[in-house]
Image 1 (cartoon, rainbow, N blue to C red):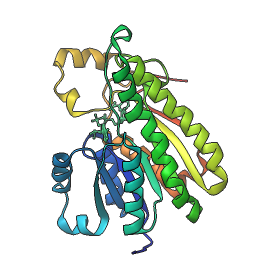
Image 2: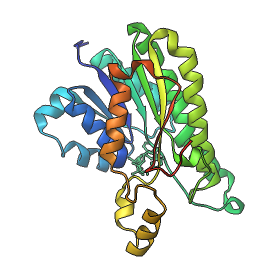
Image 3: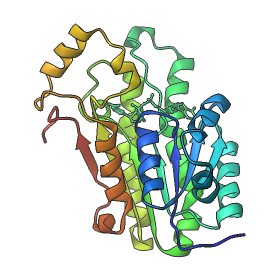
Amino acid sequence: MQMSDQRVAIVTGANKGLGLAIAENFVNEGKKVVFVIRNKENLEQTKQRFQPEVVEEQMMFIQLDVSSINGIKEAVNQVLNQWGRIDILVNNAGIRFETPIEEINEEEWDQVLSVNLKSTFFFSQAVIPAMKERGWGRIINLSSFGGQAGPLTSGAHYSASKAGQIALSKSFARSLAADGITVNAVAPASVRTPEMDKMDPDKLAQMIETIPLKRVGEPQEVADLVSYLASDSGGFTTGATFDINGGRLMR
Ligand SMILES: NC(=O)c1ccc[n+]([C@@H]2O[C@H](COP(=O)([O-])OP(=O)(O)OC[C@H]3O[C@@H](n4cnc5c(N)ncnc54)[C@H](O)[C@@H]3O)[C@@H](O)[C@H]2O)c1
């Protein structure tokens, strides 16, 4: 087992969108970063974005569907066996459907709750012993505006899962504060994704009109917020939900 002073961060769904920006920020900050990616092809493509020396020194790639609880436990063991510590966990992987309430069936309900909420609980549970051991830890859960205000377009199951992540963040925050572990939620809305770039330009312009800051957010802006929460400077903040939505929700 190799130990070093570098902090170790796990980011789920790290192959694109916010997860990739968050994981890249951590790599650039010199952390050791575990990229949890569901599918092998995406995993290989993501690896190729980085210089081989950086991959070798700072990165670990784990292929995992986060809805598998056994898979989560195995992944955590793998990180501890190879790097000996886990300091930061970002529960970012998520799925979103726009299915109307009348059409949501049990299978889709279970899928959304499993990927978005159950994985957040069990991944966090699995890293706690390693964080407690060092008396320091950061857990950051990617929730959503849809979990705070009722969704604009997403389904009720998505909204419920994202609200659940906010509640879990508070439960974990209270129970882990004495151990030096902070747990916070980040609630984005309208942050650029590859899907957004494919949207009909008129529809996108209409959507932007509803955002007080009159633009979409950039993944880098979310990544910088997550980096702050994951840092020593973020140490007095726990159980909070950070809105990053261009002013759509003011509270
Ligand atoms: N972009 C936004 O404006 C926005 C708004 C609100 C909330 N969010 C939240 O932020 C997070 C990231 O959003 P994004 O916009 O980058 O989305 P995205 O769809 O681009 O990325 C989601 C990531 O999760 C991964 N993933 C999905 N199911 C998985 C599974 N079973 N196992 C492992 N990985 C899985 C995907 O492969 C992908 O890498 C999500 O939790 C999302 O709900 C984003």
